[in-house]
Image (cartoon, rainbow, N blue to C red; front, top):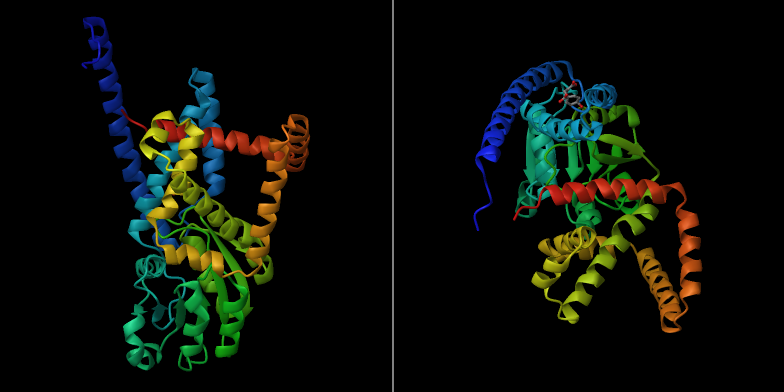
Length: 378
Ligand SMILES: O=C(O)C(=O)C[C@]1(C(=O)O)C=C[C@@H](O)C=C1
């Protein structure tokens, strides 16, 4: 059905078109300036993400917007979206190479998605990158002979095996892994190589458009002075580094990864067994349920072995999953008993425990829901 229109509406819409075109021209001008910033950052080795500059710029624009009667959140939303574009354009210019004399970087598993992303970032930073894949082991000695750094980026259950399989590396060579558990790979690397060793866990998937604002967990191994350059390089790519002991990291991952993915898996399984009609759920879904479906559904668009690997890699996650079942049963018992008062008391107890975070998450999720709604059409 055609949308209603009138001469008065058409006249105003024509003016709106003009304003939007002016905005386009301004965006074009801004993107060009950002391109120039990218060139300077590339030359001088300045990180693509500048949080202090962003915060002061956003504060000024918000104040100016308020004075002009424009909602401050509007300009903040627009600028944040525009800056996402800046990160990509600055990334494509390339990055300063921090370590001038490093030998070739060999990425074991560099043909995979995450390994490929790191291969791209190192290449954009001017390093020579070689990939060692499953079928290349007969050439491993030649590929690794003059390596300045070896990066292990293979499935979790293969990581230790691959580390043990490495031929002796040059003494000064830095050995790094990108696995999402840290204790076992770090121990295996320290055992296999007497030189510098570092454990990293990029807390993002390979589909990110840039590393701006992404977190990389750093678990120190050996010879910190030999890998400071790498930490600086990653910061130039825009990521935030979070240092933690491997044990603390693995403990946190039981909830952040293993339990998160496991509960999403069970919910997906439940939908299937209940013969849920996804089309129909989408028609009826509230914004938050849409987000829930997206969160669960995206799991099943990816490889089963990736998730099995993450969930099964941590034996302690089993205990967590059992505890979860206990809590489900505890809450279910209240439901079965029709004990609304008991339910509310328990709810309150958890709310107290969340404290100020509950409000913070409410605000954060409201923004996400608005963004999710904006991206809908039809
Ligand atoms: O000012 C910079 O350093 C930029 O790179 C430009 C810009 C922007 O688009 O305004 C982009 C990224 C930074 O985090 C801050 C600001």
